[in-house]
Length: 141
Image 1 (cartoon, one colour):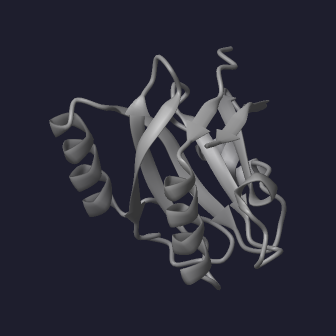
Image 2 (cartoon, helix red, strand yellow; image 1 turned 30 degrees about the horizontal axis):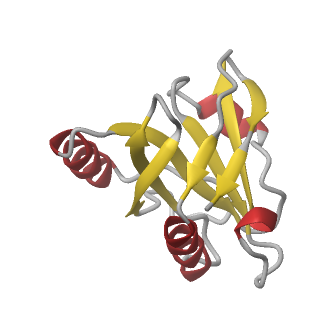
Image 3 (cartoon, one colour; image 1 turned 90 degrees about the vertical axis):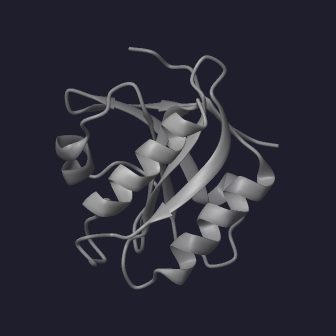
């Protein structure tokens, strides 16, 4: 399994954490684009959680289509899939592991248990394939 990590510009990390915190009490979600070869993200695309739930997320189908087309138009790669955990650690849950369908994407999770936590305390990055999750490096620059 590929273990290459993810690099986020500080402004992107701040944007996705703000989106996650604004979504409380529900999980928030979105996609990140960038360069798959280097693992450097360039943009965060917030999406609606179609489940509107504090326990699970599904990127709204309309948002998924819109975002994927925007990423393709820019000539970038779908680099990561983001979602928040409102009351638990930024570790893939059994549901997250079962529902992960993009083994080439990094799964970026945020814990919202500490409302003042910065990106390096709130975020963790994972590769998930066949139900197995392996943590990968995460840098915020």
